[in-house]
Image (cartoon, rainbow, N blue to C red; front, top):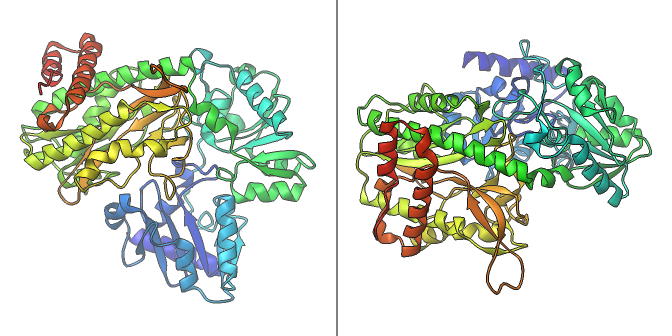
Amino acid sequence: MSSHRQRLGALRTELARENLNGFFVPLTDEHMSEYVGAYACRLEWLTGFAGSAGSAVVLQSLAAIFVDGRYTIQVKEQVDPELWDYKSLPADDPVEWAIANLKAGDRIGYDPWLASIGWEKQARRRLEDHKISLVAVSNNSIDQVWSDRPLPSQAPVFIQPEHLAGKTSEQKRQEVASWLEKRQADTLVLTALDSIAWLFNMRGSDVTCTPVALAFAFTHKDGSADLFIDPVKVDDTFKKAMGDSVRFHDQAVFPEALKQLSGKSVVIDPERTVAAIASLLREGGAHLFSDRDPVVLMKAIKNHTEIEGHRQAQLWDAVALAKFFCWLSDAALEGDVTELSAAEKLLGFRQESGHLVDLSFETISAAAAHSAIPHYRVTEVSNLPLKKGEIYLVDSGGQYPNGTTDVTRTVIIGTPTAEMKQRFTLVLKGHIALATAVFPAGTSGGQLDSFARQYLWQAGVDYAHGTGHGVGSFLSVHEGPQRISPSGGAFAGSNEVLRAGMILSNEPGYYKSGAYGIRIENLLLTKPVEVAGAEKPCLGFETLNFTPIDRNLIEVSLLSESEIDWLNQYHHEVYQKLLPFLSIQEAEWLKAMTAPLEG
């Protein structure tokens, strides 16, 4: 951690040179991405914290790092408490902390390419109320002292072919053009990497676990587009596939191009656009309109081709998981499996398909008390062995050319306690309730969230995360705008109406701190449902994953007849779908794991 002491000292020296009393350090990039490339991992470089969400504030004599409850253990393992105060989100607010530790007349810096429009506006107002200046730096202060900072990836882009995408890029751009026409606007500025990837049928490898390429784009009301991307990433084959209506530019000229939209009616998404872009557009004289990036909803509603691709990807993934759990059933009892070795073994089984491009997120491989941490990340330091009488939870997924997977299973090594079985069964009942839900068109994810929690609530317990998130098609494993989660608060998207074609996760859980955790996750396809006598269109779900649910953790007496029927039918489908791809030993294991329950 001594290197982090030196880095913090170097940053403070740089801030003093810039006449700044402090600096805000978010964990994001100029696209407001959830996962970022190595060049943008400024928070990790400065602090040592390698989680996927957090921020920091550096002052001349104090520094604080802010993480939510998912990372309270990890931050203490990775960040030196002599250098940094640990702060918990959302209870502690970075701007409020800065105000409390600065004085009138002080100046605190921020990078406008890493700050959302909304954050910049409210932070400036709150700081100025205390006569503290928020100062936009032209060059990120961390970058000035990060001597060996990696360059942004120059990996080549590749085409997502029409037989996997279901539509050409031209067709998609015409849909955006129609959207602009209805709003009497000239141009949409696209900044979200997954929106750009989907619109141009373009994929890349610039961000770990998410197959996107670093780029910006303008798309216009005539269906043409300007793509701003490092020229070394694009070959003639890709340019030809885009056609004459897509103009290519070096990403380096993007800031100047924004200023050239003078007099145009330009739409920006305030949630996905950094403050620097809005500032440059205003400087150039564009007429700005705020609206949600229309591609967000377009890509969330999967077309027939994308849905079929998902089904194939889920099958490949389910075969790998069956092979893994069969192996684990023997290996874990022998006592030589750890969290890290289990994750590596699962990766190997996924790679055996020959179709895996990448993981869709870093595998959560969690034994015993670690399973009670919903977003646990195993390291060499934290690595635990799997032991008899303890729970093992694995939340994982893959990126395949035709779909993105995400699945969680909780299994018992040996024999469970009565409490484990009771809690697991309550989670399972909630999972089934959501999987079998039928609801009128116009229903939001927030309205369905309690379906999955009701049985836990009756027992006086709950879980502190959302029940479901959207999933992309060979794109982001966390895709908006839809969610199944409590309405309002930290769960953006819970008020989004669910539409046929949307894919969401179904992942209720239970976590007993310091003891064990439980989560059962499948992916659901939203689809129309025929209801006799219905007075309005109705929707329901189709389960896409096919991985056995651990029968050893089920207290059958707590299940209703209909719940037993659902599980038996689900396991019958699992058996039928996976059997042709398994060895004799694996088939025997699968037969036992999917044997019918009797009430």
